[in-house]
Length: 104
Image (cartoon, one colour):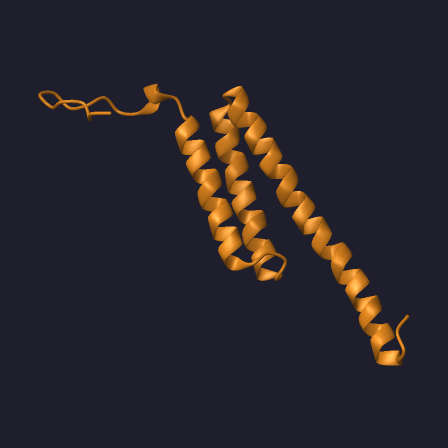
């Protein structure tokens, strides 16, 4: 129990802020799960649209101090790499005439 009026007010404020922050984090986590499911199913166009939504939500969460900037940056980079790696190889342009394909 808080001992002073100001401490009680801080408790009330923290309850409201925690609930607000939780909604932002839940939205981000839900859309990330949706992206992972779309990538696993091979729906790359839908996954690309979902990635833009995730980036927008993450940026909004950073502006509202729900997520740290570095965590948001690494999250967006990781999801972008996931989507780029999952794209079909047929979407890559063929090598130019007279050049060797890159060694793997």
